[in-house]
Amino acid sequence: MDSRLSATARAHPNIALIKYWGNRDEALRLPANASISFNLSGLETITSVAFEPRLTADSLEIDGLPAQGAAAERVVRHLDHIRALSGQRARARVVSRSNFPAGTGIASSASAFAALTVAACAACGLSLPEDHLSRIARLGSGSAARSIPDGFVALETGARDEQAFAHSLAAHTHWDLVDCIALVSREPKSVGSSEGHRRAATSPLQLARVEDAPRRLEACRRAIQEKDLLTLGEVVEQDCLLMHSVMMTSRPSLLYWLPVTVHILHQVREWRSHGLAAACTIDAGPNVHCLCEAASLEQVVSGLSHIPGVGEVIVCHPAPGATRIS
Ligand code: DP6
Image (cartoon, rainbow, N blue to C red):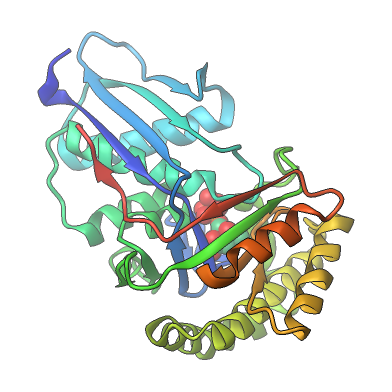
C-alpha cells in the first residue's frame, strides 16, 4: 500500500449539552440552532482510508462487516465530496471500527464521520485547518462537526456552509465533568436522527425551542467556563426536555424514551433533592447520560447500576478532538 495515499484517524463521540435538532438546509446539514457538547473519552472510532487506483468501487468495512445500503451510500457521498475537494480520483478502501454500539443514542455517526473526514483528507494530501475539517465532517453527520475540536465544543450555524463549523470552548483538561451513560438498550433506534431532523419543523414547539436557543447557549458557555455544575445541570435538562418535546409532538411523533428512561429521570431528581450534584441528558435514544463531577462519581455509578433495566453504566471523561494516528 502506498503510505502517501493512506491514513488512519481516531475520533470520539460527543454528548450534546445544548442539542441541535432540525436543519435549516438538509443537503448541507446546516443546523437550525447552534449547539454545545463535549467529547467522550474511552469511546472511539478508528478509521483507515487508503485510496487505491486499482479499485473500481469504494470498499467499506464497518465493525468487521461490509457496509451496505444507505449506510454505504452515505460514506461514498462523503468520500466523493473529499475527492472533489482534493482532485483525488481513486476509489478508497475504508476500514472503520467503533468500540461501542451504533445507533443507540451514543452518537456513533459523530465519531464515525469525524474519523473518516480526518483520515480521508490526510490520505489524499489535503492539509486543512480545523474549522474546515469540521465543516466537512458536518456534511456527513451534523454532530460529527463537534468531534473534530478538543474538549468542550460549540457548533455555530448560519445560512451558509462557511458559517457552520465547530470550535473548542475549553480544552478537555479544563474540567473533569463526567458522563455516566446508563445503557438501557443496545437496539439500534427505529427512526434515525436524519429522519428526526426532517420531522422537527412539523412540531409547533420547534420555533420556540430554536428562538430561545441563544439564551441556553450563553448560560451553558458560562457554566462551562465557571465549572458550575448546578447552573449547567439546569440548562442541560431544560434543553434536553425541549428537544424531546419537539420529537414527541412532531408528525409522525417520535418517542425515544422507554419506561426505564423516565424512571432514571425520577431517580436522579430524588438524589438531587438529597444533595447529590447530578443532571441528566438524553440524545435520540432511550439511554440516559448522567453528568456529575469526580467527587460524586462512585455514588452516581452505583445508584444507576442498581436501577432495574440498566444493563451497564459507561463512564466517560472529556476527550481530545479527532487526530490522525498514522
Ligand atoms: C439528538 O448528528 O446524529 O444527538 O446529521 O442526521 O447524523 P445526522 O444527525 P446527528 O444529530 C444529532 C442529534 C442529537 C443532538 C445533538 O447531538 O446535538
